[in-house]
Image (tube, rainbow over all chains, first blue to last red; front, side, top):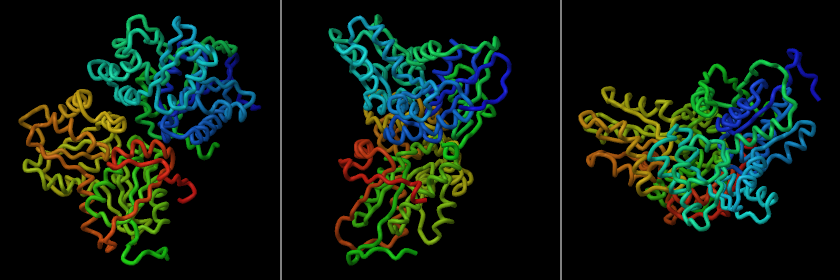
Length: 280
Length: 280
């Protein structure tokens, strides 16, 4: 498909990852933990974030533009780290890039939730767009038709994670208000909670603090990284992989807020700005 | 400039208002309260919200596209209801539309703050983009060079207002955490607070609850409406004006969340979707 560029011996083409912004860096962090030798190209469509409140039609268009920009960098696998894009764009991405493995975050999260739950009462939280789109609910129902799924949009969690307010009374009070709606009735409470937004692992502390102790928490970043590993022949580089960071706007903010999600301090100089209108 | 369409006797061309989303409907509500006979066209660029985290270059481009779409509807005045766009786009808008009065929300808010403050210690809160851009700080300094301005981004207020969590412990705790940074030292506390984001008037209750009782609160929606009234010859319609609502994405969400800011229940059918790429 691509002539590719000359690569160092044993070094495979990079894994491409895109998200509407910086939240997908939590998926990238999980990928690097599992597959540290791989090269990665990460694209955050910060000019158009958030996808969660936009229509499916717009999100599909944006996703195709993100994928085109990454495909132009000769990737060998495309990870859709955005829940909203995973929910509505995978068929269009696979049609446009038939030879590229395309892995979203929904299906791995749904599989892990069904595997983790004994009662098959599963709760899913995400952005408004993810929850209203119903993709997690549908994926869980396909895997386990008898499952009882309750889903809730937790919009303030995104703002909390971006603000870095991830500990203490305020995030706990917000978590209690949201999650009390799902777990308030002990007799019918879910035994498994899916974090269906890449921002939410940052709030694991307060979420854990307000849930019944036995609740299983499924973090779709980790489950997605495992799905990528299962599908790829690993690079034989034997050395830490390289990371390229692209954004469509605001390199300084990308670096500052993104550092929280990647778990590594980024400088704005490392972030290359790209214009997706030219690459689609 | 425009041939215009035939209008009912005494009915002037509409006032155009744009914002990145629904928050500017609080400015529209203030305008309708002061100038109820006018016709209005409101455009929310919901496909690209929020502007507050985007670069000035992108915001200027989006603003010009919004203004072009409204100018095509034969408006007689352009109100920039978005703080971020007001901070960086007014010169470009005035250059592109030299015969159209263009009124932003920054200057009226700054004037009202300087008039309200006796100590000339003034606090400004807004989105990250507005505060980092420094437009309120600069506008106040121009009007009152000795003023001591402290400014703080309060990103969570936007999410709270959109979620409708505008009363009770959670918004008060968040307001206390943010505003404590500005008002914590009683000897140097500001006597005036500018709400430099169209979302923030929705949180007036919790903001008021955590401030010293004598603090003057300047709501830029009301001050902007007054500036528009001062500049225009009122319509002589003698009947309530008409309101057209445009959005670039998500009519259902626009109507649902926008109802909170307009103070009137909107149905999605009232919201016309427009594509700004075609009108710029």
